[in-house]
Length: 316
Image (cartoon, rainbow, N blue to C red):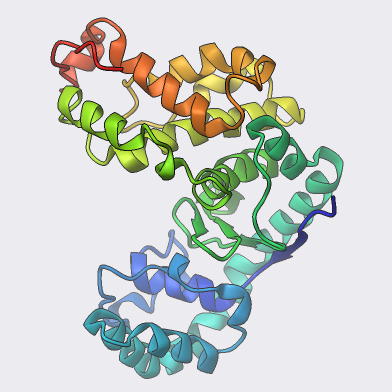
């Protein structure tokens, strides 16, 4: 079967939007000096909400915000902010080209090479037993993106950068880790059937909120733990990362002490060997999440971080 058309892109408008939304110039003087003059961005808008492949110049960006603004005051405000900020964007371009563009282009070149040699998209579809749902995949190097992210419904993923000690930029992740995490999100929710449509999903959410009440947003946190595991597995299976390095990739945060990540890792071989029991990653993730709930009391470390569970019920 023919795969999606894959493209690797830079987009100065995308980085300008990240600066406007995050107020984080990542320590770069040329873009950072604009902060005092940039208007505040409404909190409930984000760069990932646009289809960036269709935005090629500043008027396109303003039109896109205007389209989103129908009946939405925050987006209407943003559209006006963008109209007023066009002169600042022209100044931003000067700093971007000097400070950010070289590292961003280098990331794209490395990703292109590794994508061809490691074939991470083929790997993730095979591992998760789900097809990529779009005709295209657009991969953006976006230096001012503070993390990695994806654009729901558009087949676009974004990877930011981190600052080295010498002040230069280093890309946040290699292509297999990046693809593994963000495309996992796409396959879970946008490749049929969606994870949230699983017959046991609502039951799982009720149980999780009852027994781990301090872990917020299980509907996003549970898939996020799966994406951490999958990105490790894709990177290991494509030779980008040694399998022994997997645990080091876990981020800090309120879910770091949750045992779901470890359950998924421990059962991964079973999932790969039993397509009849688990036709796709959806069924496997549901079973592992219920297994996590049925385990004994959490570790002392988890208790100290407030992840107190109530007595597990017999409902499965």
